[in-house]
Every structure is written in C-alpha cells, then in structure tokens.
Amino acid sequence: MSVGSGLVLIDKPEGWTSHDIVAKTRRFAGTRAVGHAGTLDPMATGLLILGVNSATKLLTFLVGATKTYEATIRLGASTVTDDRESEYLSIADPAAVQALSAEVIEAAMDTLRGPILQVPSSVSAIKVDGQRAYAMVRSGEEVTLKSRPVEVTRFELLGVPEFRLQDDHGFCDLNVVIDCSSGTYVRALARDLGERLGVGGHLTALHRTRIGKYQVAEAQPMQSVNAENLRVVPAAQAASELFTVRNLNDQEVVDLRHGKQIPLGDTSPDASLPIAGIGPDGTLSAILTTAGPRLKSLVVFQPETS
Image (cartoon, helix red, strand yellow):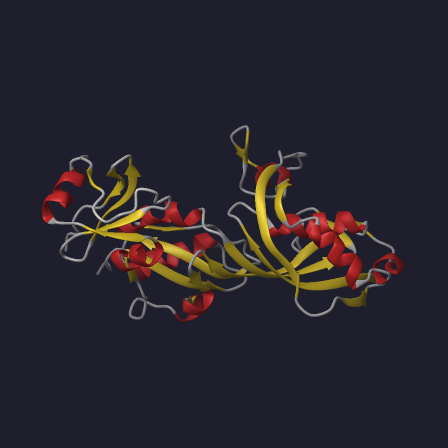
C-alpha cells in the first residue's frame, strides 16, 4: 500500500548511492514517485531528504537550502576526484606537511570563507556539452569546469591537526565543520585548501548533518528502515515547518487550483520566502509567493486520492 505525500529523512550509510536510497524507499513506500533533495556521494554519509508522491514538488525549495557538513581533510596529497576514492595526482614532501602549524592552516582556511568563486570538482554531475563531467573524466577526457559563486559561512577546525606517516608519506588530517550554500563542493574546499598551503589536499570523510531546518538527528538510519516503520513527515507539516503559513478558505483553494490569485490576507507583502497555503482540512493546497498586493501559486497540490 502506498503511503501519503510527505518528506522522508534518511541517515545515509557509507557505500550507498543516493539512487540506492531512492530505490529502497520506492519499494517501502509503494510508489515510484520518490525523489531526493541533493545527492550524496557513495563515500559520504548523513542526511538525505526524500520527497514521496506529490511532496516531490517540495524538493525544489529544499535543493537550494544551506547545508552543514562535518568532514576530514587530508593535507599532503591531491587526487583525481579530490577525495580518497581515486589515485594520487601529487604527494608532498613529508617535512613540508609536518611544518604546517594550526595558525598557517587557519589563515589558509580564512581565504575560503565568505562569498567565493569555486571551481567544482571535475568528477561531478555537472554537464559539459550534454555529458556529465564525471563520465568524461572516467573515460580519460580532461575536464575544466567554470568557477561559480558559492558562500561558505563557517569553515572551522574541530580539534587539532594530526600529522601521520603512512607508506613513507606524510599527511596532516583536519577534522572540520562547514556551513555553506547549495552548490558548494566540500571536496573542492579540501582541494583548494591543499593548494593554498602548497601541499595538496583531498577529502577522506564527509558527513552531512543539516539541510535547511532539518538535522540528521531527526533521520532514520537507512539500515533499519522497512515498509512497516518508514516515517513520512506529511506534506502540510513539512511545508509549515519550512515556510510561513497562509491559512486558506475553501474558495481560495478553488481559486488557486484554477490559476487565480488571492488576497494577501495577513501575509506580509515583503515575504521573500515561499508561503505554505494550508486548506481548511489541514492539507497542503499550494506553495505561494507574493505578486504585488496579492498571492499567486508557485506549485498547486491536488487532493490526495486513496
């Protein structure tokens, strides 16, 4: 039996792809209508938000939400994929790595905070001439992506840098926490930090702890999810948690479903974020935005059928 529309919060384990999570959830939820808001690499763990049935329409508004990550950056070597999943491109002199102080590392991290232009990792899902960049790299092509504006509002060390010798190479491992805008590549931050320090860098662990208002602590570990215990946050509840709420009367619900605009009501005309239009029966009827002195729909939700 299919579940209702809503969001599912999953704590993704290492080794699973985001597609794996979607496929499992489709089976458990009894519907093909499942999507996710922001992929995680197989190496990465943590929060993945899924939309089920008509709540997949909400994912558009979550994809652009800010995110928090905890990560481990290894200084001393660069890699093809900017993480530990590929071979080394360069390896630094162990003495140069060991000479790095926390103060020097902190100064380099500071250059990667705030609004920055970031060149995404070449092994990414960005399309170049209609092809995914990662597919082009894996087929042996050289890919150079254009820089794009992102914002890193927090990039902080957790604990002290740890120097280690491994296979006669010297590495410095940093545990960090990062708050950033959508579209930021943490792998690219690791790469760029290594470049600024002159020793190379790559990512060895990544854990997403937050997307917008949702925390990984609220999520179900994927290994324990099944058809009986799958938790779905109803669409109306999710929209009310994410956005300002505008309570609708029956006629306004009808008008919105026919493409008409409705009065602002008690909604601030300066509202810059989407507005959740909740019908008299407590269900999500539309996502709204201001249009001068009125409200118009960005997305309309039809009544659920059993």
